[in-house]
Length: 158
Image 1 (tube, rainbow, N blue to C red):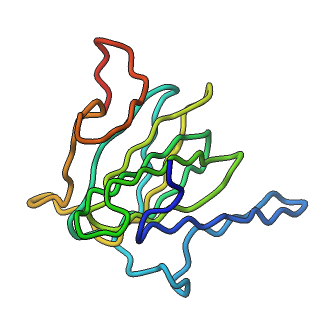
Image 2: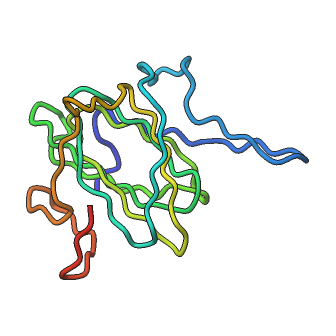
């Protein structure tokens, strides 16, 4: 699997500990990959649950796993991209803190791995538009993406 997709940015996050606890910066407005602020939200996935696939036409997704671990898979569906049809598979979370920035048109999803609920922190560049959502979905087992999440037959994830 190719480890880079045009426009996708992976930022290793640094934990700064002291005797009181720790701090970890996720996204700063003075970083080169920062575009704009839309909103901040958290979603969770129970162990083994897949939340895939989706993409946006306008917004960039910036996300990390702040608790637990997740497998993130990214697929470049943009026909004009030099990395068209490339896949990336990343493991992020407590054991590998990283921020992932995914540009518009790039399809992505994740699976909670391990035995704990995964907490996914998202900072998209646009707020969710309830009247006209910039959210487009495909089934986790779509034949359009050459990836197998290892779903059990009869189970619906997404």
